[in-house]
Image 1 (cartoon, helix red, strand yellow):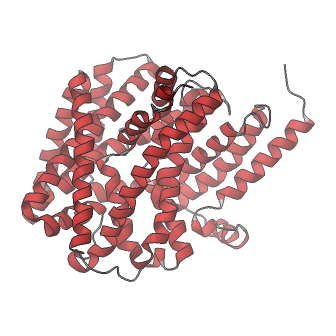
Image 2: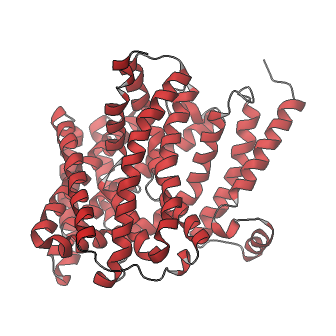
Image 3: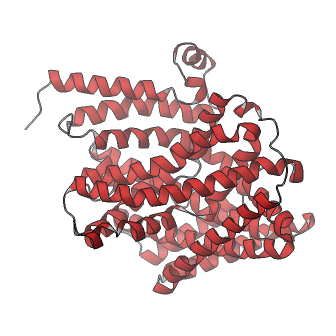
Length: 442
């Protein structure tokens, strides 16, 4: 590989960072920092595993697999499962959670600090109506202008956050407080950080972005070998990982130090907004508000166009503009529940889908080890599915006390939300045994 081709991983890495880095992601390390307090650094270790490491592995796994998209990769389990998993993934990063979240984050950071308490109830529907109307207008007719705005907004947002971080060192908001119960010890804090990283949704989004990144690597670097593509994606991903991790670390630090100044906040949005007010005054808060608002809009447009194109391809009914309209309306309606409700209601779905995403990554990477036999895919996913479903229901408050007692007493790490690992390992082993005992059908 010549030097000019080898050096292309830097701009590709910056592109990957821009895809992952959305204004919405900023609220989670900020909120985690407040709750983790003195144990924030341990929580960050876990957060970076799922919020930074897993997205990179998702893209690498799809690249290594040679599959054209997420549905093709997940269909190695079974075609129906491929359809199911892809549908859930697009719904999660689209109209059910991520798109409404962009609107509510923009409202919480960009508008709420400048409204009185009496104006909030009326302000939310008015703002969201305008936000998703603009989202529909720009998504219905995608043009290069939107892409150019996105390329300007990401550096502007990063620069603003960097200034916020630098100012937090010059004028610290306070000292980290005692951690909350969920982060009481270093080990517990690290595990909770892993679960907090789920909220970014980036590991799921990475499966969707993978096709785009891999195509760029193929075209820019003129590669066809899956292992070479994976290696180049890894180099590009290292750039994105370093940038993401650095921003998450310092935002979490600001969150941890903010409690004495602004008190505990229900989400990370007011943490950032109020911290900006203290560190930069009203002018700084206004600048942050405008950039976050536009960055959220840019993210919403990208997700809406992506989801509309997929559902048009999947259903082959209506048309692209109709799907954009549907998703904009759904996102508005869900956004009306508010950021705190959206974040809370997302958790059960994440507890269900993330274990399935992790085992798919492992299976794609070890595909050659077991000769790509479907039985290994099926057994691993099937047993993981059972435990992931139980985790999802339990997180939603739907559980059997008897089953919960058995799992708590006999399944290690169940209370930490990681008991599915043993089910996944058991499914993988059973699949390998099945592969040895049952000959492949030709």
